[in-house]
Every structure is written in structure tokens, then in C-alpha cells.
Image (cartoon, rainbow, N blue to C red; front, side, top):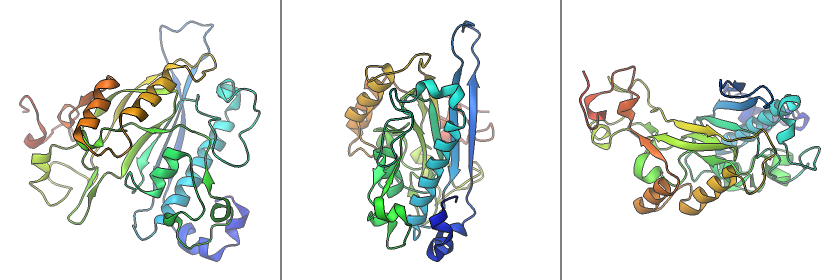
Length: 298
């Protein structure tokens, strides 16, 4: 909440500042016994967040996400000595205005409960790197430069781990008597490859309940997950790297909310993704019978 323009805005304070949502940021160092001493260490930035839940506060969700991404940028900049060689070549700092690809070669994973569906302003902002100040989800509240100039970030392209495949394997991440939808997300930068994704809850099991939690599922949210491949960032990456090709392929073969099961399957096959059922992960170590596929569980 460090923007001075916000501290003087009563509307901002009433709608946003009173929310107690939190985020966590971490810098992880990859350990690999096969690496040689002359290689630069590999780092991954991981950030997770819980965005406000109320559907009547879409503007709060968008602004919280914008502040979250700004904090991620500040966190990365504070570790410039470790990963600065991965920043966009020929530019000392990201542009002041507008979206950019300044940090695209930095390994970044952004995940959490965004309380926002794939067609929301929150996901549009993350996916497209910008939204205008008059975006419907921002509403009529006054958010200073956000409302005047719009929102933009410098992590383009960020892709969902489930891009193009929700229709076939992830019907929802939140199930209640009054709502069903995908509101939890995992986003990765161009320096992260996705090799395996966790499937959603078995539909036959889900239809047996009006909502979660149940005796088997301890939350109204289900777990989602991806297995990643940290691409080689020991040297500067360019537009011809595996990371860029991977993102381009996924963008071509399926949008963030595909319209057919066939497009989802094409996205899975073309990107060599493995879909891992929830039963292989389990809930508290004991998945319910309705979740078990291709075997038994005792």
C-alpha cells in the first residue's frame, strides 16, 4: 500500500485498505548435484496470494493483484545482483508506463487463490499484461493512476499452468452449494516449462455432494499442481528459446478458457503434458473411493 496517492483517497481506504488479504514471496535456489562450479546458480521466484473473495468487489481483486505484482517486481529488483543478467538486455530499468517483457527470462511462479475466474479482469490483467483504467471490473471507484492510466506489468508473457486444458481436466477448484468454478491459478514466466499437471476432482464424486468440504475433501477448494522444468537461464534467453516456443505453442493450441474438449486435448498432446489424477496425490494421504482411478486404495 505504499502509493502516496492511495493514502489520501478515502474511497480507496474504505474499499481496499480494510481487507486483510496477504501474500508470500520467496526466492528459491535450485540445488543440482550435476551442476558444475563454473555455472551460475539457478534461482526461482515463487509468490502466492489470497485475493479478496467478495464478487461485489471486483475492483478490489484487480487492484490487490496489481499491488501484488508490483511487490513481486520490487522483490526481484532487490535481488538484482543474483538475477540481473536475466533482465531485458540493453535496458537498465523496465519502462515507466505500459506492459513489457523486461522480466520474461526470470524464472517466476505466481500462484494462489485469486477468487477470480479465467474470464475475470484479474486473469485478463495477468495474462495480457495490461487492462485499461475504464475496465468494467475496476468499476467507478477512484484508484489514482490506476484509474487514469490503466494497469500494466513487466512479466509478459505469463501463462497459466492449465492454459487450454481446463475444459477437459479442471472443471472447478471451488465447489459450494451456490458456486462452482476455477478461481485458483498457477502462472509461470517464459523461463518455466510445464511438464505435468494435476487433474481436477472426479466428476462422479463431485456430483454426489452439493459442495465441499466433505469427509474426504477438507476444504471448499481442491488442490491444483504442476510439475515444472526450469529452463536453462545460465545465459541470456531470447525469442528462440525453448521457453518462448513452449509458450507460443500453448497460446496457439488453446486459450485460457477453451470452448471445446478437442482443443483441450490438442493442447495436452502438442505440449507433451502428463495429466496426473488427484488419486495419485490424495487428500490427507487417503483419497476417497470416488477419486481413485485405475486401482484400489486401502
